[in-house]
Amino acid sequence: MKKRVLILSASAGTGHVRCGQALEKAFQADERTGEVLHEDALKYTNTLFRDFYSKLYMQLVREAPNILGWVYRATDEPWKGEAVRVQFDRLNLQPLVKFIREFDPQIAVCTHFLPAGLIAHLIERGDLDTQHSIVVTDLDCHAMWLSRIFHRYFVGLDETKAHLEALGLPPERVSVTGIPIDPVFAEPVDVLATRAAHGLKPDKPTLLLSAGALGVGPTEVAVRRLMELHHDTQTIVICGKSDELRERVTGIVGARNPRFKVLGYTDRMHELMHISDLFIGKPGGLTTSEALACGLPMCVISPIPGQEERNSDHLLEEGCAVRANELTTLAWKLDRLLADAPRLARMRERALAIGRPHAARAVVDSLIDDPLPPLVLEKKQREAMVEAAAKEP
Image 1 (cartoon, rainbow, N blue to C red):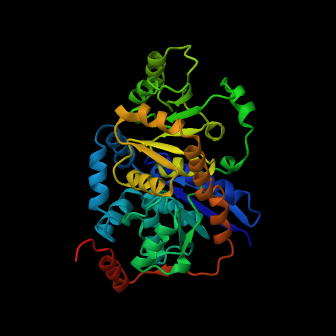
Image 2: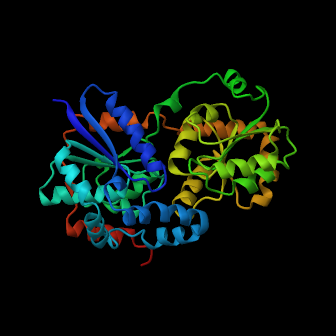
C-alpha cells in the first residue's frame, strides 16, 4: 500500500522550507509513496504568532543577532521550557492540528521543531498513528529539536549523531544522511559554457557573494572590500529578494563594472555555485549543504551567533572554509587564498568529500517500509538526558 506523506516546515528563515521542498521532490519521485504534501506550519496560525516566529526572527538577524546567540545558548538544554512552549504552540496552531488529523499521514517528517512538537503531542494523546521523523537543518542539533516521541532523527554529521547518542538516543534511531537539498545541486555543469552563458569570463577566478534569498548580511561592506582585491577576479553578487539592496550594490560597483555581476533573487543557484571558485556569505545549514554538494569552498562572514557559528566551526575544522572575523581583512584574506592554488584545491576536495548531495533520497529510503515503531522517551530517560547534557558539574 502506498503511504501518505506529510512534510512540515516553518518559514522562520528560508532553510527549513527549502529542506521540506527537497524532501517533497524525493518522496514524489518514489513510486512507493502515495499522496505527498509539504506544508508551512506558520500558514496555519494567526498573524501575531506568525510574525513572532518569522518577522521577528528576521528583524533580529538584521539588527540584533547577538540576542539570537544569547537565546540559542540559554535554551540549549534538554526539555528546558518544552512543556510551556509546546502548549503555547498548540494554542496558536489549532488549524494545523485539525489539518494533520484530517490528512492522517502514515509518514510525517518535520524540518522544524515547531511542528515536531505538535506531531509528538498528537501521537501521545492517541489522536495520530504515524511514523514521526525529524530532519535537523543545521550541522549541530540544538536542544529544542528534541522530541518526547519520534521515529527517527536525520542529521548532517557523525559528530551530531555522537552527541545525540551521548544524550541517550539509541544509535539505530539516528541516521547521518546530511541535510536534504534539492537534487539539482548534484547535477554536473559545464563550467566554461555556463560562465559564458551568464556573461562571465571562462578563465577568470569567480567569487560568489550571497546575501541569501532575503537579502540580509553586510553585503554592501563586503562588496566595497572586494573592490580592493589585488587579484583579477569576477564576483557574482546575489541580493536576494531585496530590490533596494540590488540598487545600492549596483550604485557602488557601477552598472558596467566587468568585475561584478549583480543579481536579485535567482533559481539558478546550483549553476552559480558550480561555476564559482569560492562562496562568500553566511553559513546557514541549507546554504552550507548546497555549497558542499557543489565542492565549493567557503569564506564565512558574519555568521549568526549560535547555529551559524557552530556550522562555521565544523567547516573550518574540516578544512573547507576560511572565516573573515573582520570585514576590514576580507580582501587581504582572499588575496592570500587566491595566491595559494594548492590550498584552494584542497579545500574544494574537502568540500566534495563531506558533501551529501543525495541526502533527501537517503531520508526517503530510510522511511519507506521501515519496521521501527515510534520511540517514547519516558520521564526517567528525559531526566537522564538533562544530566548527560549538563555543562557544569
